[in-house]
Length: 399
Image (cartoon, rainbow, N blue to C red):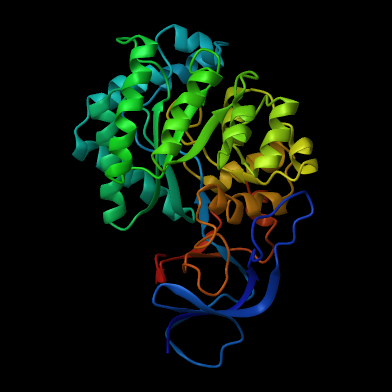
């Protein structure tokens, strides 16, 4: 007997692996059932048997739960003062140089206890789940010194033990703390990477490769050390200007390169050859009023596109991934199919979870969203409306 059966759904299965290009086949199956047992999808098709619990989707869109592949969801305080400064015309770098930006959040995050940090993270993750996001990539990077960085990673580990699906990422190279010389801080980062790996505190390492933060060569040094210690690599690449991030992503084989507003032509070529996924953050460029990434070049080169919220208190105070998807459609002109793939299967591959999550296929985790809609295009169309009617996480009904 199945634990749960979802009946009569319009299943957006996204089976068949990672999706590329503008004309994506979402593999839609009408009037299908989904059988779930032991937290896994065990059948997709017509099911004659009964189950302990059944839900009639009544023809509505049923698709894999959303995956956010890029967030900074653990932090202290807010940066509402910078919100006003930005409206009055201050740039990202002007705010940073005046003492704001990342370092403002670092001060507030360092002051919090582990319990306070966990409560902040838990509240954010619960809010995200209500919008269908069952798996969240979470970065450190608001400590910028050993003790707080490790404390943040330990909070991620605690959240995982409490049942949250988190992909933990070490982002010690987020900025340079003012109390240290850059070379000294890079040495500190390199020294704690083996400890992070040995204690299974992160799956990924990330670097903010950008002029004014970490150069291409500095970023390469850090990411190579991570690879030596069996941490997978991501990179904040070319957000403010072309800084060599996309090239580096391709050269060392990063799983993803994120932001990518100003990648070089060479960087795009190298990413395509390496199979690096472009994680786009439309909420951030919209919020900052910055340029748009070269979507057509990504499509033409077959670079897969994933979409993240970049949830953080400074440049994207946006928790809800479906809204980021809507902004991607309107601001970047991504197709509805690209948006859906970007927040499901491609996001799963960007988080190295493509074998477990991101599509409705037998054997995968039973993380499923039953939406309010009968047309998948309504998900990005209704801006700011929560698309979730019922969320199933690990085979259990959440709402």
